[in-house]
Length: 129
Image (cartoon, rainbow, N blue to C red; front, side, top):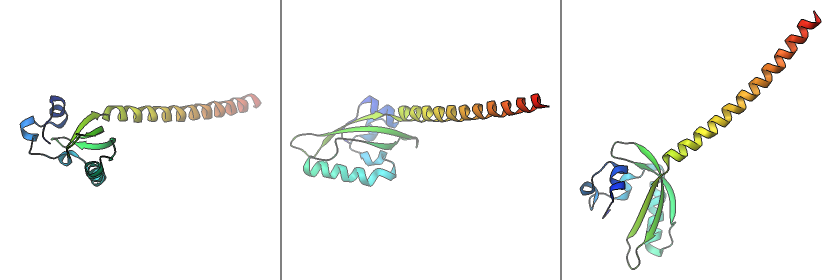
């Protein structure tokens, strides 16, 4: 890594002088996708045709895992790239919460329907006595 902005410092928890020319992007990547991302980057450097965007799990200085959307562009005439990172952790967590809420709603609707049905049977039995 040759340069970072303030947003990356905040995202990573490291100061610029701790990162520049001292750390690699792979220092921040969680293991499960590290090999795939390394292949993407090598392919991009060799042919200029690696994926221009992908998602990966980012580990900050404190061990917190964040989900990032990444866009990469090769700098013409070099084997260097410019990378933009977008923290989508909140969006994904929000999406999960919405899915859970919807599932909970479905379960509550099913339970309510079952209770109404059971209540109807009980009321019918009471009337028949």
